[in-house]
Length: 385
Ligand SMILES: [Zn+2]
Image 1 (cartoon, rainbow, N blue to C red):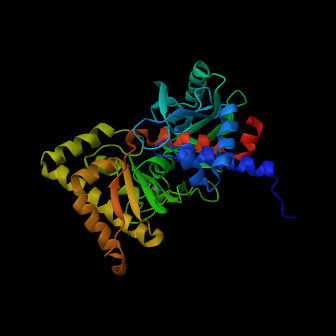
Image 2 (image 1 turned 30 degrees about the horizontal axis):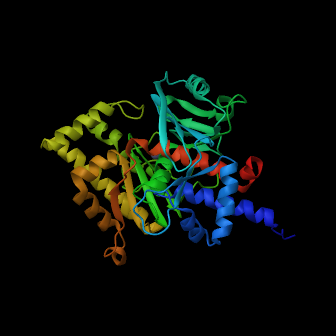
């Protein structure tokens, strides 16, 4: 049976849209601009802002003078309003930050960990140290895929199907969790190089390559929450067998593992980062052997990107991690190989390939975004107002 929307529902719906607009905006905007943005009258906008101010969700501050006409006010997060916490959990370290509506991040604490699931207890203790009545939700970025949203695999740490619900128990604040490569892409789509694009892709290159398809500013997750393992598609035809059980994975040719393998290092256990950085430095200094290894990495990256562009038709592709170095050192080679993999009719309009702008902050920023996504809803607002 179709549900009818009451005027109270409509008001909550518009309040959620207004908070979303404030959160997503690159710059603060005025109440009049909010009315235009939402397609509502100025009086309605004034009433919505008043209610949100009273609920300590929004705050109006005088705008910088200099504009013509009447003095106006800008809409900003309420100084006593709710906060999201965000965690970036990596293979050897973690970072905890607090994030306001609008995305401003304040780093609270970071630490190293012992590579066992006990790290989650350390992070929970850090959250408790900083927790105030303002904490509304926690967003968590972790390396490794999380099947069905709760079965975590971090192969480099030997975590095979660790139950997230055992790690994040009853004592935790409301928590949302996702994979770091996907969250880095989400951050680029919301606040970085891919902002405002309808269809885009992001790839994070570390030991291997992971990524995400971004549609209308959100990341594609798949039926079991494990979409985006582009590194485990045989895009470049390697004859090697991958640790994932597939032969010929793209990750065997792109990323730090591929650089390390060429110079006799052990691959697949999250070690050898220094050796990979050394290879990049030597290539940059003109060393022929290191240069060849970086050439091969960049060429394989470009070939894979072209193949994926044939399937998914992104407007732009951003890269983070080692991808930023590869763009800096070998942009021409990446674009040339991408073009060679593109179907001929696409070659006059190849996808734009760019370094991401979020850098190291990508997963943390993405974790903050899923945290705010979880609460900027009419259901949450109804409880709050
Ligand atoms: Zn694989």
